[in-house]
Length: 364
Ligand code: SF4
Ligand code: SF4
Picture 1: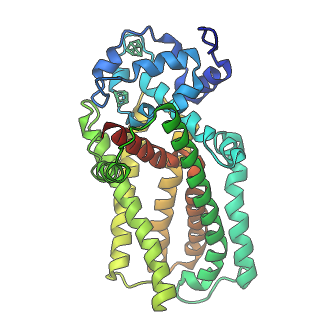
Picture 2: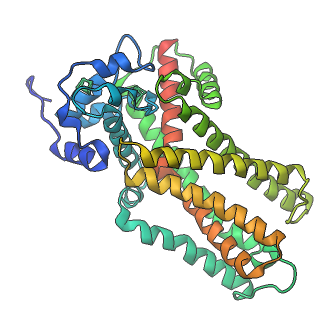
Picture 3: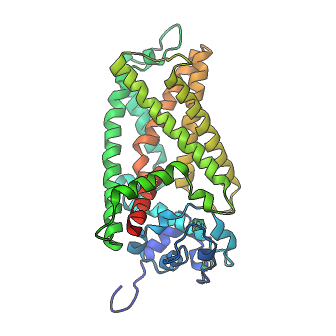
């Protein structure tokens, strides 16, 4: 903006249209959406203001707007919009643009934002894991009982996953740091803001998903997201416990079916499967429209859970034919999810949590 004039970022408007916000120009600022939203604040309601900012192409303002992330995409506002402007989809498009904007390194954000790069991104874990497998046992398939650690030793898995996970962690921290810096620059916090208390408050909201329950017409999403969230957390804990068993207790897989870690993993898999199925079914019939970001993330998660379950079933059935290929495919999907997390829709967990902390700290 200069001399009182607004200089729209036409490239950003085109990007929003490309990422699911093609209806943004239909908005005529009636504000019905902000009235319908159960999550908005009274003092600076959304999503009406985001709609006009999007129409004007105010990229910097939208990229540093915490309200974009306080929306849980329930769709209530889109249902009531008299113009069919789909504000819920426009906010999702702004979030999709943010994944690319804050990605570090930038080329990873660009790669994850386009389906054209999907084959290359999928090939990376296949090649890395195949190289690790070959270097350990030359692709030899163990004879007898199905034991995955004989096929793919943990040190082979770690040789790929440890550096890749470290890369992912560094990138995630850098992306969140960029986002946080933009938030506090555009929306300074009061000098006495209590950040630790805001972090605890945000964690409580995330664990209970209580903001989901505030949206009238789409309460079902809370249950689906809660199941997926707890399923994912359980599987994450299980993976780390298996490593702890291996390195600290010298206990190897497969674990007994009644081992607490195994039980946690199986319960987590059921939760994640049901949650994923729920979300995919609803997304498939939704008229909100879904983008490459939405589908890539949820389908990768779904396939990860399914191949994990099939790996276990084929091991229990003593079927080495399907067991080892499925297990290998499962590992490539786990890599896809974890290592590409900071650049994909998966990162919404990080950005939303950051925005919640900022919003709560601003209220103190
Ligand atoms: S998005 Fe729809 S409901 Fe919201 S201000 Fe624009 S026209 Fe009105
Ligand atoms: S999608 Fe739901 S939470 Fe998001 S702005 Fe619309 S009504 Fe509010």
